Image (cartoon, rainbow, N blue to C red; front, side, top):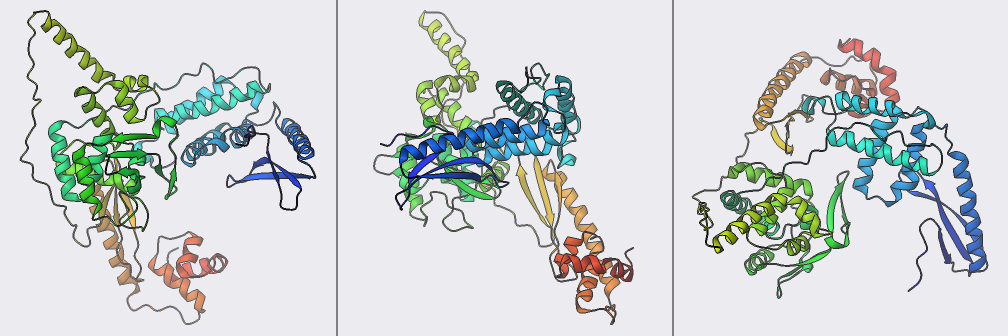
Length: 524
């Protein structure tokens, strides 16, 4: 096997014409794609020497570019583009770029690197916590979450630590900053009776196999949705987990898991294998859980989460995250005697210590029960607790989904604590116009949606009354009439790009006639 070159030393290859080419990355463009420079030589050794000189030249140019008095924003961008971004996955890149370009650089970007102080950073974190939210402030409040503030601090600290290593500053000013406390999200698991109701409702919804497999294996959501039929050996019941799927800007991406421990093989219970064997007969796709909308595509993580929330609500279960199904599997496994090492391997954890840290509450209970058994073995009396270990039977009947009446809009659960209501009636111009409302609960969203429907119906009726019998002036040109018609039907619209797009003209034409037509339609 050929020796792999070290990271940062470029690449060397022999071209078809016999010459050797060396290539090195010199930076990244706005889309994150690498910019490269190359050298050519007759022999491999000569090519390696030229490439080494090129990299040294680029390195000296980089050292000249970075200087202690440069703005912190420039250094942060340079650090991210050259030291961090190349090794990140798309989802992680989006997190970094959101923190750097939306929050840190706008606030601290102009301060010289060697003058950035702990006071500047502390005040920045305080501003983020009090009023740093840029979108959906009405739903979540004006301040950012504790985890987002800590994420901004971690990014600043890493960039400044690199500046210390490069000798640009003496010490890291982020050291000693007071941060919001680190609070782990409370783990929730479904009880045995809730599990029965949940699976009955999932069966009625057509999602039984999806959630049964997850509750029997503890797979992560991306791992579960990336499964293909080739990953399951029906003869041995062995399931191979070696892929994961995730969404980036609305597009599904398929990749290998982050760690080697996540690539694993699981042995399924015989009953689950039979359920999947029967389910396989009705699935005409290579994906185990295909998308009902897009051909040859797995079910998206967002669609799976929405299905989960609908089923939980109709089954009368507490609202849990998709990841909490994994916690439910782990908790039930420990309670039924599975050892931590085996569970750690099934979950794909790097070590058993990770499993113990996460499920310490379960292991504490197991220790108490073990102590009671030892005490009982020594002949001491131990008070028995009433534990219903037997199978629970429920008389729950699955709830059939309700279809909303036409004209009442629709409500979608975006995440665990945010609902979106949408109403899209046909406007007098013959096109559908959608508006949204948001709320923290379904009931509140329903109230806001009803108010929005009344408001839009009144606005539509008023528009119909205004334009009834009104025709555009004869003196207008064809394009002016298009703009006039659009502005008559959209009295609220003032954005020139939106007007141009809706009227079917270019923005220059819309800007040229905007004021004249606005006076004609009487919106001024």
